[in-house]
Image (cartoon, rainbow, N blue to C red; front, side):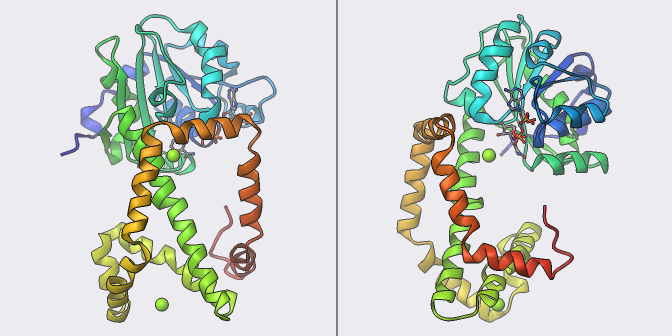
Length: 331
Ligand code: NDP
Ligand code: MG
Ligand code: MG
């Protein structure tokens, strides 16, 4: 059974007694920096001189310094820049400023798991990863709630690393919703697998294939859009509230029967065999190395895929239909 931690298990005074640097002020960075500050923690934000994010952080009254200055001042350094450049940020700004007893924090384990960052033995290495997008992390905190987090310790140099991680999680509201203990390996591998096979990759491919099948058979794209994409949210909301059982309770018996007999024809043994291959490529580092190489090459394939999908009939149809539904907000 997973180990879960709530408000009373975490001591906020630990992180309140430290100096925290949040490097990066994007989706996660802004949520961590603002919520820690509102929890009474001494926070500075580390951003490069020309960074687009600087103004936003300064408008919130946060003190912004360079990543190197932030790392030098602080004894808890949370790296929240995009994953593919964290190793460079670490080499240039963080490593030269690490002192024995400092703590290095991450919001995702990729760089530690695959050895792109190799911290010295005398610092704590921790992870606090909210299981939700950064803007929700901040919104929930402001509303007095929290997004569940997972926390891990890769290296416990001080003997107090996990208590520090829990304290940090409390500072961003995580212990209100619950913190699950994990490892860098488990977090990294399951996170990459989930987003690729199910949440983003699997779902996007399923929606596209269903939409294309209907349109190629001569049905109207607008009808296919509603059937294969729009309604998915309603189905997922039911699963979120009460698992597959609640979804099946709510849909018609006809839909439920179709679910049982057709689902396994779509996601077949071959699909699952491919999922196992995907997982193996995550575990052996193939995926991480390919992704870092793509990023460093200037994202040629990534941009190709992005452009192709933005021109897909599913997307152009959806854009028009959503304009007519005032309650469906564009992000
Ligand atoms: P974003 O892309 O939203 O933000 C990145 C931030 O880093 C920006 O403020 C950017 O500034 C800044 N930055 C870029 N380069 C540098 C640099 N060299 N030095 C200092 N700052 C720099 O990142 P995310 O918040 O999405 O991701 C951060 C981490 O959180 C990742 O490890 C990710 O895996 C993890 N995570 C993200 C989640 C999410 O909700 N997005 C969920 C859970 C974990 P500029 O404005 O100049 O570009
Ligand atoms: Mg992820
Ligand atoms: Mg239907």
